[in-house]
Image 1 (cartoon, rainbow, N blue to C red):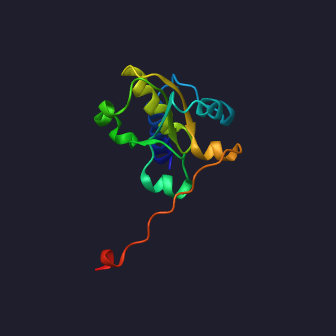
Image 2: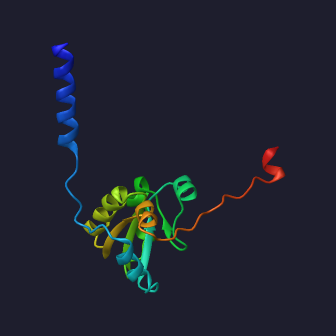
Image 3: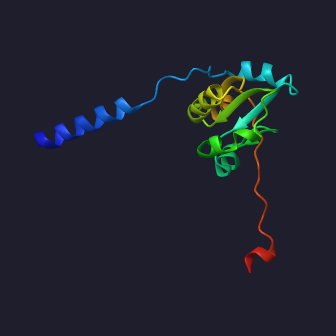
Length: 138
């Protein structure tokens, strides 16, 4: 039993020791994001969630979608002339993605959690996936 407790303790220490440092980018409130969105020509929302997450949780009307795992492969597709806000469900992946972008010279103004935004009274767009066509069923 002592051995099991010791192994559990060591595993917990290892996990906590591997956690990353706090993000260098601010997590935005709904009010802060709404203020930025009032200048749509200056801002780019970069959603780093999977498509199924955007579909099930909702998202923003206009955004660039690049999953967090693929971000570094697609840096050339992200405009450098706009302020960027990264988006995930609770801003965790968004913060990590923002840190990567900052390290590559992008102008990132913050990260936001879409579900947090909605909980604070913001409105998300609920996307309905298209129904399969009869040809798809064959």
